[in-house]
Length: 184
Image: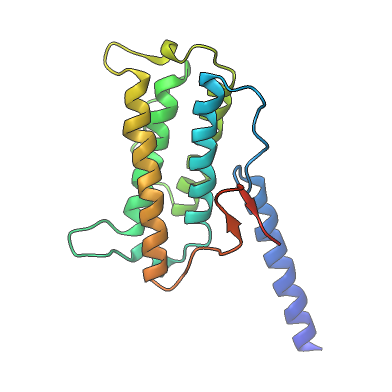
C-alpha cells in the first residue's frame, strides 16, 4: 500500500511538472505560416532558437548548471544567464516597449521561463512585420541582430547541450530538431 501511495504521489508531481513545462512556449514548434515574408522567416528563426533552447535547458540539474568544460570557461548556469541576456537584447531591439535590463538576480528556472517568453514575444512581433528594416537603428541594422545575438544564442544552446551531456544528463533523444516535434 505504501509503494502504491508513493507511486501515485510520484505520478501527480511529475504530471504537474510536465503540465507546467508544456505551458511554456516552444515545447514543440507550431506549424509555420504559409507565406514567406521577411518577418515570417525571421520569426521562424526565433522559433527555432526557442525550441532548441527549450530542450537544451529542460531538466537541467544543479550538477549540470555547475558544470563547465574548462577552468576558463563558463558554467552551464553562466551560459544560460548569457542566453537570457541575449533574449532581452533581441526583444528590446525590435520592441516598442523596450525595457531596461535589470540587475535582479533570477533563479535558473525564472531565467529559463523569461527567456522563452522573450523569444515568443519577439517571434510574434516579427511574424506580423512586413518591413524588417524598421528595426534598423542608427547604431545597429537588423542584419547585425541576426549575425550577432540570434546566432550567438543558437551557438550557446549547443554549448548547453554539450555540457549537459558531459555532466551525465544527455539531450532528450525524442526531440526532433528537424521537425520541431517530440516523438512519442
